[in-house]
Length: 257
Image (cartoon, rainbow, N blue to C red; front, side, top):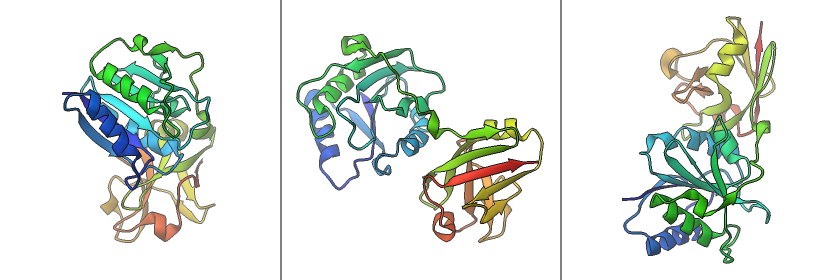
């Protein structure tokens, strides 16, 4: 049974997701669809990359992953397919995959166009690619090698000897604010020194790290590295996003001394 994961910013209200699944059901035998998320903030590939990067490896090898995030790509944005670590991926060449993988994949191609575009996506080409890859066929039969793999370095933290400038990339269902600062980078720049985490232009400051939410009393502010290894700002049994006014793309600064 083919396993296909779907990650989009299409939402559940409109017909687009149902059309994609329906087209796949026409050409595949009992595919198993797993919806990672369809509630990505529109156009927010950093948010999508955070969710997807920490999810896809939980699936078995042979899984095909489709990522439809970026809203309405420009007419010259390529739809690409790639293979890495026993998984296959189909999505836009808009920088998303550079945020997911630490190393550029080797096996990557630009999909041949079907000539039957649907809205912003060539659904016919995407359906054909998913069917082809789920059957274990050669990826290079789907198109030609891409000439320019788009990188999105501007979504990564900026560092100096005594500071890290990052941003909030995801607000979870509990209102916890997750940043693009990971534990490895934090430890590297910190080098055993004291630190001060500042949010909302220094309106809120944290100088210690917690291991769990309950390390502080109910209603108090805390910072910890979550199970995915990213710095998270939270309130124990509270909603940090609404109570502190934290939102996606807000700046987070860490000073070391």
